[in-house]
Image 1 (cartoon, one colour):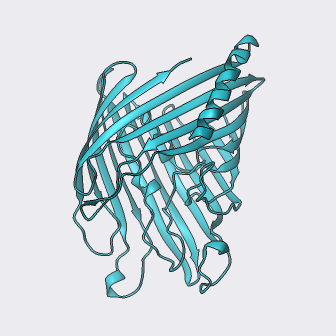
Image 2 (cartoon, rainbow, N blue to C red):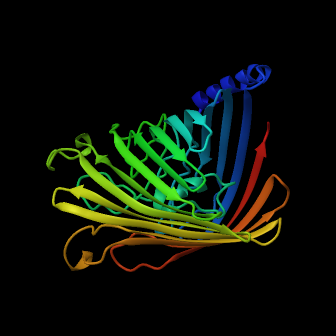
Image 3 (cartoon, one colour):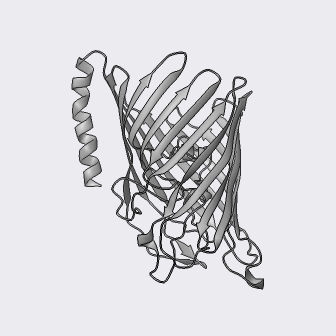
Amino acid sequence: MRKAAVTLALLGLAAPAAAQSGYERFSLDTTAAIDFFGGNNVSSRPQIIFDITATANLGNGWQAFFRPWFRLPRPAVTNGVEGTIPPWDAQIYQASLRYEHIGDVSTRVDVGYMPSPIGLGMFDVNPRQNPMISGHASYFVPMLPFDTGSARVPAIASTYPLAGVFTASSNHWDARAAVVNSSPVRISIAGVTANPRSTPVFEAGAGVTPIIGLRLGGVFAHGAYLTKDELAPTLPQGDRTVTMAGFEGEYAFRFTKISGEAIHDTFETPTGNVGATEWFVQATQTLSPRWYVAGRHEGTSAPIVGTGVLFSAQPAMYANEVTVGFRVTRDVLIKGSYYARQPYRTAPQPWDKQAAIQAVFQKRWW
């Protein structure tokens, strides 16, 4: 946390010099949120999030980004028993440089730590941008182990890898290609010691915008998701790869926004390839300048965790949320949600049903 604070202070010291140059500009956006959940298998203790984004316009198409993120998570609850109170979590979600050229075909190059180029759910990590209260469970909860002796992974991860991304776009199409240092099913964040060993992964995406408000696109990724260093000595050695392919779409019309994605993973294992599929669809309806309603359905269909009668069904996780939002002032937003989830399982389990409330403060200081 101290390292992130010092870096943020140095960026702040650079702001006056940027203002004097005439073409350089520094901006600082902050989001603070606190939420409470109640119901089945959840702690009633609050979760607190601080999300800070600093941007420096360096001139001639160059920009620098720095995004520290701090969270006080709520204790985990297992079979109705609350665990110990966890410490504050401090991470750097973005520390990158960007060069952008505007034209009939605009181009952009990003280098550094940044949000994963794959996954529309990455846009909902910030509480200000997330129309719901909960995050995308599929991005955080690992699947049940389907490869004995190896690490558990989600079907898609909320990850901030070291990456180089090239993007090109026009009024009706966009395309991007990236090389990142970890698989999009593994968590990679600057300064986090639990990161897997870096392996190059190729990612790509493209989309079309046939009419204003509608975008349809596809994504692809291929590379190692497990390294030989992470495997037990008794298992067949060598890096194991994952191939990811998916579809994403967004449509905005008449104060309504609908978005969703479906991504399929093909995992390499010693006994053959296995598949997993992650999906979500969410919609937001603005009722007035102060009120909105939103809903999300998401799920992950995971690989079979074993053989025999007990494991004949493919385990899956589902989550549904309905939210009402009220903007008290320009900077303060209150949300209330009903949340229902069914965790990964190898046998039928009841749904966890919860109610939640969240207060979000957002401010752009300059």
